[in-house]
Image (cartoon, rainbow, N blue to C red; front, side, top):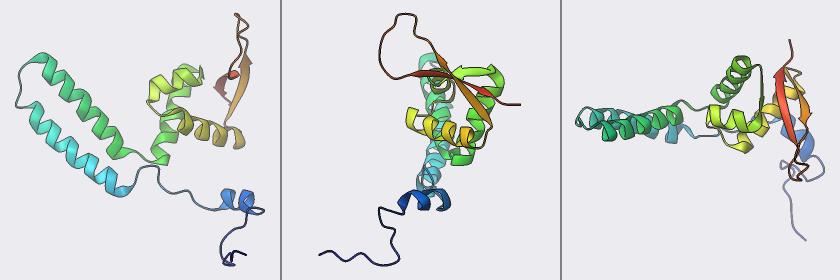
Amino acid sequence: MSHVPSNLPTSSDSGHLAASTPKRARISEKKRKRARELEQKLIFLTDQYTETELVQLLQRAVADAHRLGQCSRHSDRDLVMQTLEHWGAAEIGDCEEETNLSRWVLDQILIEFEDKKLIGKRPVRDPAGEGGRPRFVYFLIH
């Protein structure tokens, strides 16, 4: 018989716990700090090269490090909201390309927005009739 401490949630009440428990940061503060340090080093390296291809490569790395250094749940939500405001409506694949967020992170944000009645979704019919994951277009509710 296993002993479960009384202060830990059981499987029967874990669904209720998820809504009230704050989620931990998607990217830890330590990792964000290291990303900001890396960004500074990459900026320094960019200044050391004159070859266009190498500078462009370093600039992309700087942008990626910057994005990681600024990453938070709040900034991710803002990014998705800005994307929907810009496009008016978008499928999740379009949001992935525009925001560079993972499908899982986007799914979580879109579910949260739906629950708060900030967005709606409508199904997209597949003209080829192929199976697979259902597709939706997400749009802002005004």
